[in-house]
Image (cartoon, rainbow, N blue to C red; front, side, top):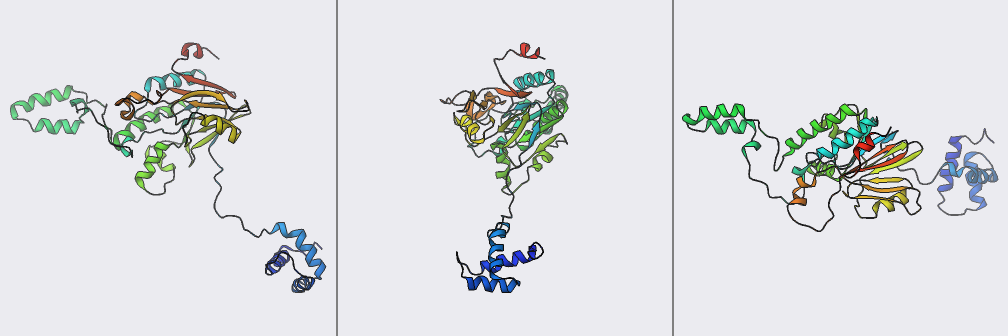
Length: 342
């Protein structure tokens, strides 16, 4: 029988049986099928039921499964929502210093690495009046040249002593990218590997281009090196000492999102995006379910700071997973005491 039922013959058997398009067929029809292959009707029928699962009627989809997020192993610092250039440098420096003391050599940015304010779909905001510190060198030089000759020499002399400031009321794309490159390159100096999870603010970049884009283009745009990895996912996985943490920038920022998704995915769930700080477990009590805060300075966000609103204050936060254990970081931890832990 093994010699008779080659793959080619089995495939032909399936095609002949499918040609009848009915749930059951008669002995005469099985006899006809067997005759086409050169076997008896009983042999054809038995072989069909034995081998039909090898040839499914519906072929597999030609499109890929979305089941290959970035995966990191070991210990890592998790940085949620820095939203450069509106990042909170003081808090970032504290978590980076702790990571250095604990010899953490890996990091994960949990979405919204850049704010992309200039690409925002939100309404425009009021800005402060420009000051001389906000002018760039070329603008300042051209302004001085427009003065009368008696004032021009004095202006050029003053210009040599002025350090043009880099604080902006409304940065353009070039400003944001320049500051982001400088800031992210500093992370390259501190870590051996860094995973870049996509967030909704990176979505602003895609919408502005209005076309399909590979996420690697962001790394090229930011001139980031081989230490960085990125993938078309809004989450990544961290495996540490037998525990799996799902580092996510989900769609929902609702209060109980983390608990719901920890239960759904059966993994520890650490979420950015909400800018909330909330520590809990899923309903089983087995998996961490946490909102891990943000690393953006809300006093630099016009939509937050210019007008009173009843929303919760943004909470500065981050996390370290070390040897499978979660350490939540926020403004009120004892940094000196944590720094002494070995």
